[in-house]
Amino acid sequence: MIARLVATSPDRVREMIHRFNESGMASLDPKWAGGRPRRITTDDEAFIVETASERPEKLGLAFTRWSVRKLAAYLGDNPARVVRIGRERLRQLLGANDVTFQRTKSWKDTDDLDREAKLDRIEDALENHPDRTFAFDEFGPLREFVLNNSDHPNHTVLTRRLCRRR
Image 1 (cartoon, rainbow, N blue to C red):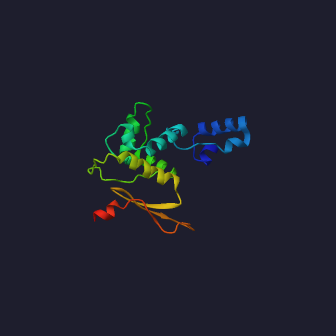
Image 2: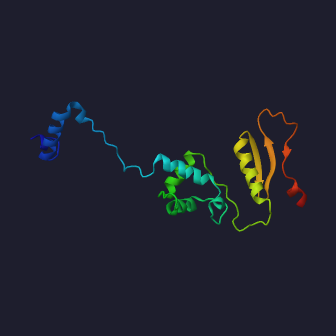
Image 3: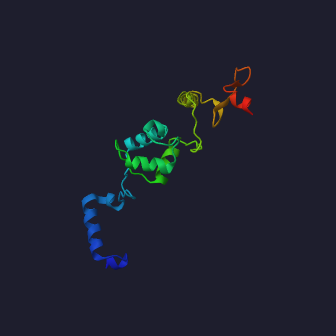
């Protein structure tokens, strides 16, 4: 009679009665987790952010900047630690950790002997001076603009080489 009233099977009604007898009113509020279990751990997330923050060249790869597709492929085939993650979830995770990729022209290479030192200076400037805005192009930093109540007499020019070439 109850099964017909709630449009279910008699077995389901008996199951709910037994569950109510065992746990009382708590049985009426099941604690379903919903969704599949997590495949990416917190340690995996930290590893992904750390890897995405490194230049691919430092990891022995033949390109200058990551893309979501390249990073996902590298993480899935990484010999040190394999992390399988889809591109959309990777994009969400990077966005939540404020990791973005600046795109560069992969076909344009340079024979500049100071290239690594310049790239390190750019990374240092971006990490250690969040109150400043930097303008970059293929040759490196062009100008440094100081924001908000600056005590600078004017804007500091980091590199004038490009201006002289034009």
